[in-house]
Amino acid sequence: MKRYFIVNDCRDLIKEITKEQYNNYEIFNKKVEEYSNVFDCFINLKRSEAAIKNYLKEISKNEQKTVYEIYSDCKFIFLINIMFGRILIDNIKAYCKKIISKELIKYIYKVEKKDEIRMLKVLRNFGQHYALPFSNLKIEKDETNDMTTIDLLINLKIIKNNSNFSRADKNYVYKLKEDEISISTYYKMWMTCLNEAFIKIRNDFSDRNDKLINSLLSNLFSEYLNIEDENLVHGITEIEGDSINFLISLDMIPINFPLIKNLIKNE
Image (cartoon, rainbow, N blue to C red; front, side, top):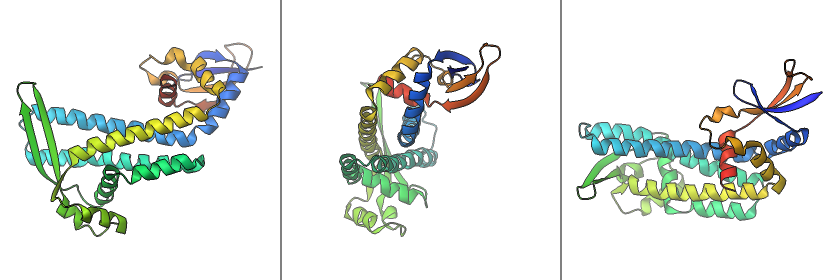
């Protein structure tokens, strides 16, 4: 006799489900692969955003760091954000082509033409070969509102001298007249744009699911949504045996629970 369970990361059986629920989840799991590439990359992008936010808070309070120490730190944390931002665009393009959506393909190509996304691509291509050329730092303190604004600038002249750019990148960069650009401003713009792009893809993926699948996810996992330990829900397994003490695991379908949680909460 076969039975079906949700299991945690220790393979403990935490909830028994029906054969029909198991089969339906198996169908969903086959459909989720391309979208999971988009989701996982977006989560890493948001982690890098949190790292930047925390670091800027830290340097606004810690006046002992030198400008060069700040530049060194920012070369690292901003490059990670830039890399994940550009990978997210590439993963979204792959998703759109996989599902053959002309509307979404058209949408993502429009996104790529936006100024902030073109700058993201230029900085990604430059950052693959050289350190980001931070050249200035402006810190403005508003004592009345107890706020500190930090503006990080990048030397555009150095970027323009890069020989590794494509023709499109060169054309874009050389049209910019400034000697320096505010990466802080561009960063806020591309994060807004990337957030919007992710939400559009998530909504598309959710809409493409059969209503029964969305209902299935909610029925299986709603009770775990507010539990902080995301390893609690690790997989769905098929088990052979009649007695709970003599069960033999036959197979396990892994669960990307952060992805499931995000889908359910945003239905």
